[in-house]
Image 1 (tube, rainbow, N blue to C red):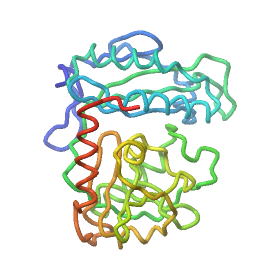
Image 2 (cartoon, one colour; image 1 turned 45 degrees about the vertical axis):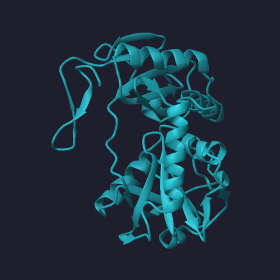
Image 3 (cartoon, one colour; image 1 turned 180 degrees about the horizontal axis):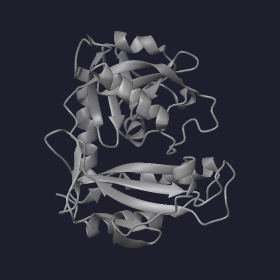
Image 4 (cartoon, rainbow, N blue to C red; image 1 turned 120 degrees about the vertical axis):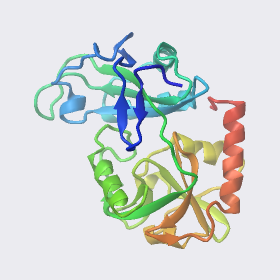
Amino acid sequence: MLRPGAPAVNRTGRLAYCRAPMKVWLNGRIVEGSEAAVSLFDHGLTVGDAVFETIAVRAGTAIAVTRHLERLRRSARALGLPAPSVERLREAVAETVSANAADRGVVRVLHTSGAGPLGSMRGEREPTTAVLLGPPPAWPATSDVAVVPWTRNERSAVAGVKTTSYAENVMALAEARRRGAAEAILGNCAGNLCEGSGSNVFLVLGGVLTTPPLSSGCLAGVSRAIVIELLGVDVVERDVPVGVLGEADEAFLTSATRDIQPIRSVDGVGLKAAPGPVTEQVVAAYAALIADDPDPH
C-alpha cells in the first residue's frame, strides 16, 4: 500500500491527498513532494517539450521497467532531447518506490528540455528529470469504448513519441466519458484504426488476432510489444478501417496499468464476447509471464 500522504481515490471517485506529501525523485535526489520545485519557465510546462513513461508497481516492483525506460530514451532522442541513462533512471524508480514504501502504485517518469524562452525555441539549461508515484487505477474487468471524431496524424513529427503534449488525449477521453465509455478510440488520417487515448488496441477478425502497425501512428506500447513478442501467440500487424473494431469477434486494450483489458462494447454496441477465447488466452499468458519475470526483456 502507499504510505500516508499518497494520493487516494475517495468515494466521489476523485483523488484526495493526505497532509503528508509523497516523496519524489527530482534531478538526482529524493525530496519531499512539498519541497520539489520546477521552474515555471520549464519547457515541459510551457510548451509540452518533454517525454514520459507510466510504469505499474506491484508487490513493490516496477513492471517491465527496462522496456519502459528504453522507450523513454527513444522518445527523448526522437524529440531531440539528451537521452537519460536507463541504469540511473532504474535506480531512481527503485529509490522512489522504496522511499514511499509502495507495494502497489503507478510511477511516472518525466524528462523535459528544462527551462527555456516563452516560445518554441529551447534554452540552454539542463534537462529536468523527475520520478513521481501515485495510486494504481481501479480498472473494471471489461471496458466500453467510443470512437471519437478526431484523428491521429500518422505523419506528425511526434507520431509514436510519448510526449507530455496530451491535450488531444484529454479531450478525446473526456468525449468518450461524456458518451458513457471508459476509453476513447482514435483513427488516423487515412481512416484506419490507430489506438486508444492511453492504450493500444487488438481485435480478432475471422479468428486472426490483429493490431494496427506502428506506421498507423500508434504508440509502440510496452504491453503491446510483450503480447506480440513474448506470449507465443500469432499476431498480424496490419491496417484496418477504424469502423471494423465494432465488427470484431472480440477485442482488447493493452497498457501498462490495464495489462490486457477486454473490450465489452464499441459506441454502445456490444461485441460478441468479452472476453472471447483469444483474449482469455492472452490474459492468461500475459499474467503468467509477468508473474515469472516482472521485467521481461
